[in-house]
Length: 70
Image 1 (cartoon, one colour):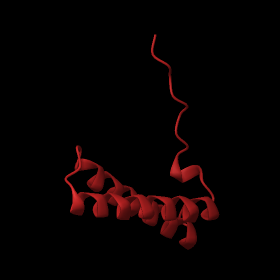
Image 2 (cartoon, rainbow, N blue to C red; image 1 turned 135 degrees about the vertical axis):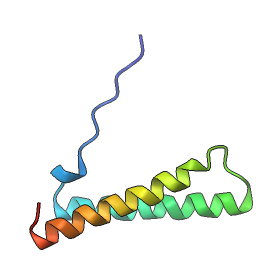
Image 3 (cartoon, one colour; image 1 turned 120 degrees about the vertical axis):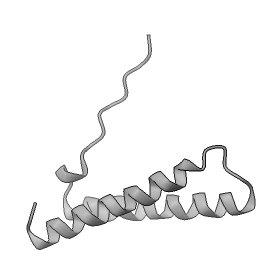
């Protein structure tokens, strides 16, 4: 039987410091994906889009928390 992975922590439940750290990780991953794709095509180029959208999600939630909306 397949193992169940641990549920991902929702970005809405993270603190501002955790969001900032996660944002840095995702940005670095996005940069690395772009760099690797420039030298040789990725097997799954959709990873670049997913990383870019994750950056946007995290920035939005971070901005909302800083403004006090969440």
